[in-house]
Length: 471
View 1 (cartoon, rainbow, N blue to C red):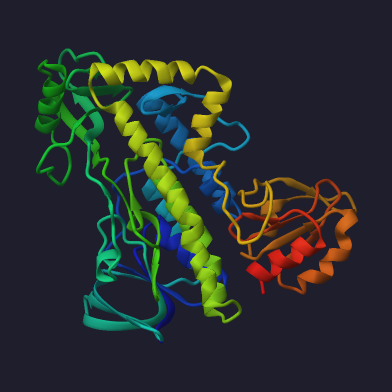
View 2 (spheres, rainbow, N blue to C red):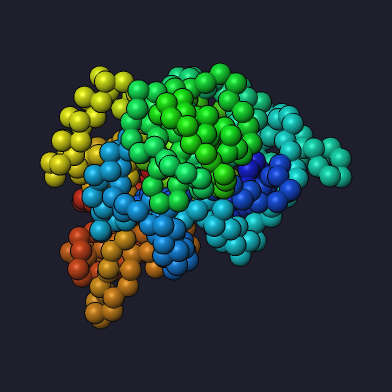
């Protein structure tokens, strides 16, 4: 075979998945249809869980540096530092687990360097046109600058975005809802007076800092390509009823809020991750977070299966765990679209939601909804919280008083068994399957390679957890 796993798509999700597979000791190969990395600023940050996932692989310092630059851009473009739900800017930041402000091209560059350092090959200008799959493996028929090639692997993962071909080529269903709203925006220069930002009978006019844009009901025949000054001026006129002169639009973006999710994330030897598995409104900035967590969940499992250390049924847990998380994001982005639609009835509902967000408990609810930190996986054995939740990074103190961070023990992509003094005898159960870290300052827990707490209990429960994930 040409590779153990072929990954279609060299965006952030595909690159991170490839790096995770390489850490797992197998041979990934990334195929990308574009000849060079995309420069479009489609996303502007990653959530706390994705930030922690990358920090577990040693990328924390690079993310912190990029965040400083991203925060300067954000303040210049938008002004407010408060998060929002459906453009109701009242969400208080989580100081303990903040999101990272980083443009998607910069994140892709960072992950490309990470994957390259691990020896991941990326072949650009390679467009997958067909997929042949059977019980023994999968073959990708690829259009390349050198002509058509057949590339074989044990598995293939589509990380080629919402418009990618892997999903349809492999026969996945993609049910969901069509667009309700569309948004066009960018860094805009006006000549003359500008209507006040706000909600209007025809939609919403967004204007703050250097950014301006319009959200209105979806229109037939949405054009492709950059937003032109004339197009934006016409949209502002439709929404506000007033004429404006737009002289320049830079770094433009256009998006709709269709919400669709694949009926499964695996069909035999073909799997999906990121936007290939789910598309939704970008409201709340959840897309990259969702996709990177797909990659974190799938990578170590697929590597263990390819190595022959775990049965193929382990892959069934990928959709069982990530499917509900994707559905939850579709749910909250649909709710945000409903709150963004124009009309007096929605105006009244927005006022009530805004008042609710003044309550600390409700504010935290909406914040957790967007960050995903409260999403808990249902594991295949009885357990109570925090089992099933993503464990945050924390300080660990060993018997000699030395202090390390949990993320320092996760860079190799293995599971980590943290044991307090009362549980040291449980180390024998690990049998070199995971890294054992003795500590004195926290209770015992088992962390999967994707950062999910898999155990926090007694000896019998630990044996079940180890056998389930690290047999």
